[in-house]
Every structure is written in structure tokens, then in C-alpha cells.
Length: 290
Image (cartoon, rainbow, N blue to C red; front, side, top):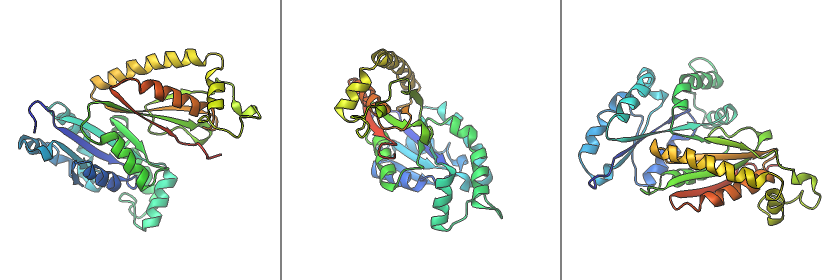
């Protein structure tokens, strides 16, 4: 390992059926040393691996979940102990809504590890309650409800590829009528802007069209909101860097996720991308859904 380089440990956990195997495979493709189904008690000896000084062990990802049974309940304690060491520890929590999880378990015809003699839904509820505090303390949350294997793999690549010191930001537009993004670190509301939907010549277009974008950005108060929100983001992102958090999702919503939020997300993303220390990905969760 290069002198002065701090080793990285990524703990991958979350809901059963939310994509742990896909994330593990994607991390391996990005050069991470991946250990699956590790008992939390073996987290501390991981520091011995880093002490070997081999470059291949500079970044280790461990997948830990409720398959560990009674051992799993001690996970947070061991994470806190590692955070006090010289190892850069991050926790990636994989989330998905109940409907998506039930569908996935039914498709593979396997029981949920916590359902016992009950239904799959009983296992999901029990697991969600067990993981509540762990989710709240996670550094990164991925909601995989609407992601297929390829989309999730690409998301892992965006967040963890290479060893760049740049901060990675996903600016996402969405529609409030389809629900809040579960993995958003910050949420902004664009519904204060006049809706292009009520303009006959703009209704069929989206915020990706220049005519709609200009209409949205030229509405009263939008440029003032943009400047103020960027100042807030700069302060928050600087704090994330100090806390060794290097990935964030900024969600901007309007009613349907077609016009206002798309235009504003594109604009905010473009402005953030002017910072050479920030890598920006822009996504539109609900565009085309109406």
C-alpha cells in the first residue's frame, strides 16, 4: 500500500433482496476485495489484512446482513470501534420498498431469512425494524426499488470506481406524486414554480427541452432560489467531506417529475459540476412515467 494512503473499508448491508450480491459483484469489478456473509465479530481482525500492506487489500468491502443471526445485532458496535482506528470506514445501506422485495422473493421462490413460519412480508417487517438505527447511521443509502441489475451496477461504478478524491454527487429529479426518493440526502421542492403543464405549447415537452428549461428558469424567484440553494449545498458538501462522506444524492421534486424538477436538476447539476472536486451525475427518476 502506498505510504500515507488510508485504507478503506466498506460495510455493505441492508434489506434482504435489495441487491447485495449485485453490489458485491460490481465492487469486485472495480477492484475491491469483497468478503461475503462476514460475521460482525470478524470486522476488527480486518485491520490485520490492511497491515499486510498489499495494494490489493487497500480497499475491502464486507457484506454483512441478517444471515449472521444473533451475531448481526452487534454490527453497529464493531463499526464504531473501527471508526476510531486509522481505517476509513463507510456503510452502504441497500433499501427497497415492500412491493419490490416481495416480488423479488417470489421470483426466486426462496423464503425471507426472518419470516420463520410466517409470510415473506412478516420477515420484511421484522428486518426493517431490526435495521432501523443502522439505516439512519449509514453513510450512503441506495434505494433499489426501481433498479435492475445493470442500473444498480452502474450506480456502484459511479459511487466507488477508482480512487479519485473527488466528491460524487447524484442530482435527481422526481415527482412527488410517485413518492419521495428513499435514498435522498437532501430534498428540494420545485412546486413553487409556475407549471409548464398548463402551457399548451410546453405540455408534451420535458425539462430537458430548451424551451421548457428557459420557461422554468425565468419564472419569478427561481434564479434567487438557485443561488441560495447552491450556497446551502456548498456548505453541506464541505461538511460531508470533513466527515469523510464522499457520495450524496440531491433530489429535486415537482408534481410529476417531468418539467420543473427536470429543468432545475439539470441547472443545479451543471452549476455543481463547475467545481473540479465534484463529479456530478444527473438522473431523472420519473421522466416518461406519466
